[in-house]
Image 1 (tube, rainbow, N blue to C red):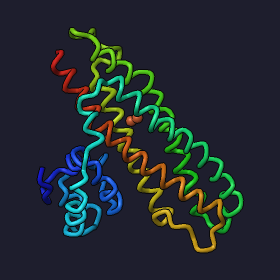
Image 2 (cartoon, helix red, strand yellow):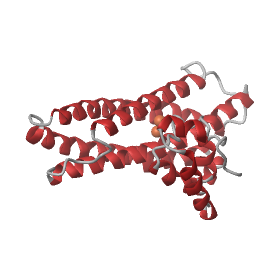
Image 3 (cartoon, rainbow, N blue to C red):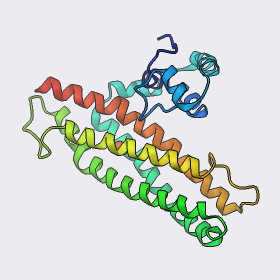
Length: 237
Ligand SMILES: [Fe+2]
Ligand SMILES: [Fe+2]
């Protein structure tokens, strides 16, 4: 695949995972906004196209796709991987950030009201994600695993059609994407003030790690797992 300004960002991330750090560095949305062309994504992210293309070109030689396996792997294997690698990490990170957040709010919330705002957005995203993971792990992932294992068309699930929970999950992803952008703005791109204490620095670092992992996680679901599950569902109908 030749990457041009018209290549869809999602395809770049799927075909060349080595490009993901480049997209991250330039702030190009490849998960929720992955359906845009590279040129559109650059305009949206207010970055110039040429350096992005240059950088992507440099990454391509070693772009061996570890994610290519997910285009073919059984769903059960893929969803187990997502839960182990991304859901578990996010849950641990939420606990860690919650503790750091409380300390920073207590010590600095009065002189730095932005810290309180960050705490509110974090509380929102963490409770939404906890519910979201519950739905994926207990309803959607087991269903698509069974759908693949069954040789024939399955009885309609309790939720009507598999399209419904997938659409719902993708709406949650968009919402999480919005909140992550808000956190990035409120934290000045995760740059702590010069006089910030170690806890404050650790908090921003942990939030940024959470953002990166969520981008990769949402990319796997929106761009690989869900389209594959929908394609199988349509074939069975
Ligand atoms: Fe997930
Ligand atoms: Fe998800």
